[in-house]
Image (tube, rainbow, N blue to C red; front, top):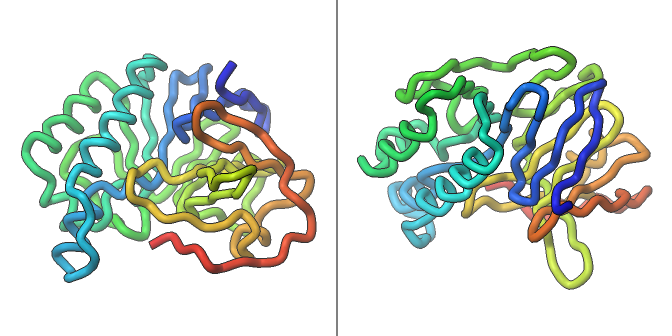
Length: 228
């Protein structure tokens, strides 16, 4: 098996190698931090020029997750768009592609710090959402009860010769990796993440397969990476 199965507050979940989370009992796929339109937003604001294919590549990977899982419900955990103007400035074919992915599915947009307003694509737009034993929000709450599912931090972990996007998992919460093509990342040992995860905690590395490794105890905080 290339995925990693675990239980969180009584919910049986699957971390997929793509960085998406799957809840089989609910036919629910969860993704976070797609940051669609990042290349357009950076060009608009005079930043570094990025290749313009990031929306297409991200939507291709999202479509593969939804088709393979036969998901009937989707939760986007915030920062789906790099900002609200980036949402409005999607090319027509990209906007139609996203609309097609939504067709026939229950779709929930969780409010992110990059996209705090409602989307033009229908579905439900919520600050956070409780579903059974789980609570979905964009940014992890330090005092959250068990069953929290969040994103925002774009966690990564160096393992072997490379750096991998990673889920971070402990007994109370799971933090999803960024799903978008051109998203940065925050090291698992950064103070912002180390303060949230309680031992025993695991990182679930993404890539060709979802690989669980223990989070080292006593890591020195490292804030050299960013979630920009």
